[in-house]
Length: 117
Image (cartoon, rainbow, N blue to C red; front, side, top):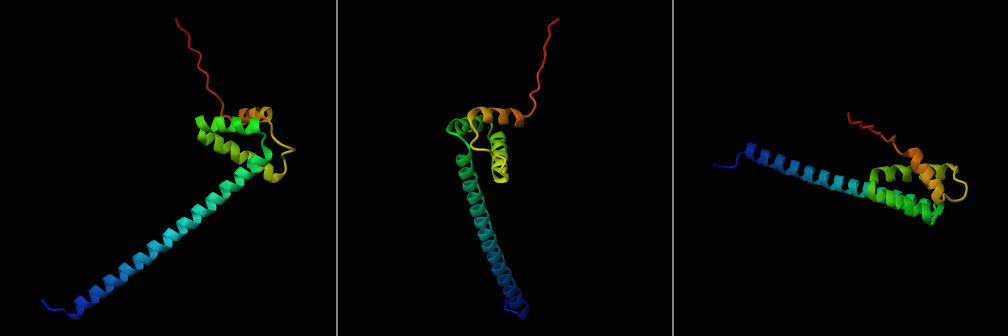
């Protein structure tokens, strides 16, 4: 089998496509790195705001909630951060205020009344 112009052209197209795919993969890797860096920066800013606006007791309570309910704790952190950014936090949030905030943000508990006959 000899190399025909069609075979050469096909090989050339394959190499070109492979090069495009490699470049595209490199570009996506850079985008992911940039996204990850931006997310880490946002997390650091959020933590700095929380340290600034929460007392030690409030932070400990929030950390305890985070151990058992990470999604709920993330929601509370976002709420506190939003309040702090909007200037609606006067002074620092203490433990009692954190308890109240947790109660307000907590989804309604469903209670079941079981009666035996």
